[in-house]
Image 1 (cartoon, one colour):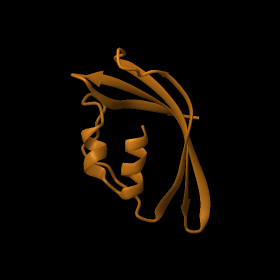
Image 2 (tube, helix red, strand yellow):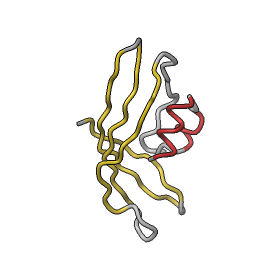
Image 3 (tube, rainbow, N blue to C red):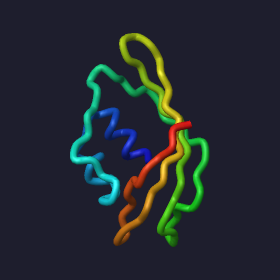
Image 4 (cartoon, rainbow, N blue to C red):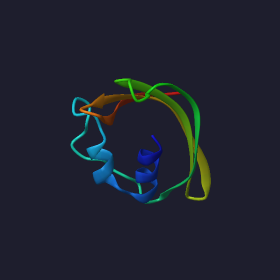
Length: 93
């Protein structure tokens, strides 16, 4: 989760696509260069350990755009395939 947040903050769409689950991966990621990400707080995790194949992460990401603050809260689902974690999907809260 933290690496994907960092990829959003740095504009690394290639990394976002590479870590997106093949069954839900879009053909491209459109990042808004006017958005500036300024913080991530993990609220809750479930599963996602060494022996798990799935995991949940609830987070709040804060940012600014045009001088105004915004926040994104999501419950994200991840799945491990061949030892590597992929973002499957999420529900905005």
